[in-house]
Image (cartoon, rainbow, N blue to C red; front, top):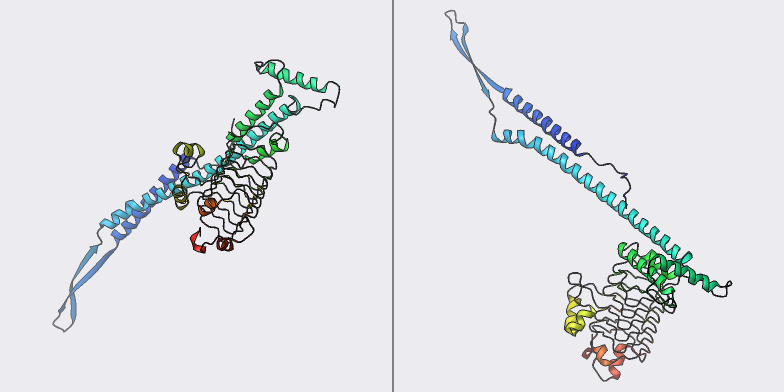
Length: 412
């Protein structure tokens, strides 16, 4: 993609060199001139011999003059060289810094233009698929032979793309949807974290990722690190999606399918996760230095998810998954990995936690009222349950007493 011409001016290299040389020469002559004045500076002493004549008058017979000059010292010579060179170096450094800042600004502008151009191209491609290729066909009864016209358009697409590999009576819509899926994944992989929200929102609004409407698969869409704060994706199909380190603060994901999603280190503070399916999702901490450290594949390979391993992850200052104040009412958390997650003030009313991992998780002031599948083993592995509302409606401290345990015998 050709880049737009720069709108910012850089200081030419020849001008920097010329200016630096001029400054060096000027300062050199200025310094040498100063030293010449010092050498001209002298101290003169006069000695007079007095004699007395026969008449008693004093007569000056002789005058002697002595002149001393100041000699050039080592520091004078150093100043003669250092001052001009230092001036030239300063000019060069300042010019270099200015040019570097200008280039950085220009690169940022060019990157932004490239992102906008990629998004515009994607929008054009999706418009073509929707309007001309029948990605969203008209209802069969909207006009005579509406469905047949839709099939004819898809057949034309198959011929043009040489995709006629399936039997003629197979469902043609799959090819168009696969093409839309490929283009969506490609554009998401090429966009930065600030631009990923727009195409994701587009396919959602078009109904292409509705969980009950044969949705597009976005598990390879590269949404890790994306800024998706306050996005609304209700009842969306996000199964297996990579959302590591993503910003989902205040997002509305009610009723969405996040089965097997990778949410390690993501920020879900105050997000609406009501009735969300997080079955087997990974919400463990994220290690930027060792990304696969707590991945599902690595955990299956090493079979290492002990309290010590997850607890050490928290104390190693890894990025903890933030669920503070999140709404998880009625959420399905079957075998969900919530180790070390921060669930402070989270609402888990009626959530199903069967088989979920709460090792070293923080549930301070969390609400577990009517939560299902919760066992003492799960709760005892938590780092904190202080002030939490237990499944039977009791506060954690009172619940401990009814269990006949001391307050300090369980998780703190």
